[in-house]
Amino acid sequence: LHGPWRYLLAFSQQLPPLPNGRHVVLSTGLPLLPTGQSAGLGSELWPCAAVLCRWLRDDGRGAPELSNSSVLELGCGTGAVGIYAAALGAATVVLSDGGSEALLRLARANADANYAQAIIPAESDAS
Image (cartoon, rainbow, N blue to C red; front, side, top):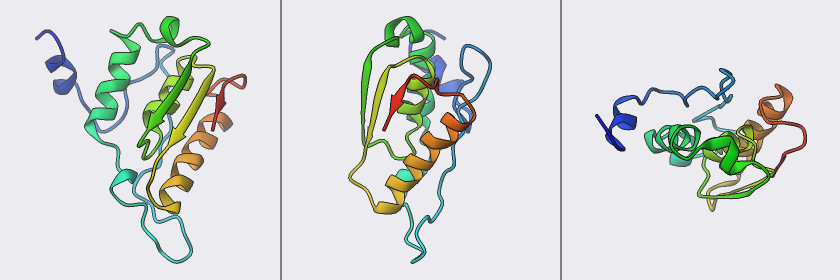
């Protein structure tokens, strides 16, 4: 198959590997507040996130196009696509979502986990 359909067929429950073979680390679907407040639907990894990450890596020419660029992810949920863009070399990534406080904590925790494991380069600014 050609075009976007090949990405839908290749979808798995995780993001595609980065060009260096490593994987972005993501937590999903967790209640993150002591009150038990759920992070809601935004806390799930949706198929479109994997499709977009695969496109950024393959057809979007990933690292060359993203190197030293700024990325704004609106409705970031878990932060998957923005974190993936940072791992591909985006210099600045802003994760934004109008969801609950729990969802914003989840996106921040995911970004922090990827910094801690050096999946996002230290010189990248993901906030």
